[in-house]
Image (cartoon, rainbow, N blue to C red; front, side, top):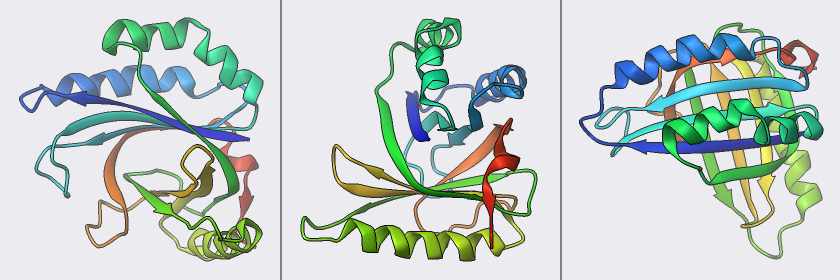
Length: 191
């Protein structure tokens, strides 16, 4: 399993309806993608919910790294490059991923949490698994993932929610434009 995100900064005066239409049109193409747990098409809009600028991003959780490699080397990613240029791709190793009871996502949250060199990764993982179990029980949770960025040694927490954006939720808040979820039902649910 692996997770990744790539983002595109957009001009402050960019017509975001273009992005909303793009996500609605292209999102459906991912609904049956083999090896993909989910792909979230997400947006941070300037001057809303703490966003300084416009940011369009794609967030993935893959069951199969080979399928992720096929994507990066295939036509779908070439479409991204043709539209926005080659993005920097953040790649993370999931420590825990769970589905919740909600079916449709409206908001997405991402937290980046650095940890010390002396931190015990096994202890962190156990704590994050317990945290995810609790979040997965919430009625608004679609999915929750904790991953580690091995290049910077920080935790990345991802939470897909069926509720509108809550500005008190930790992390950066994004509007979910489309959620493709071909293998989400295969994730462990809350115990």
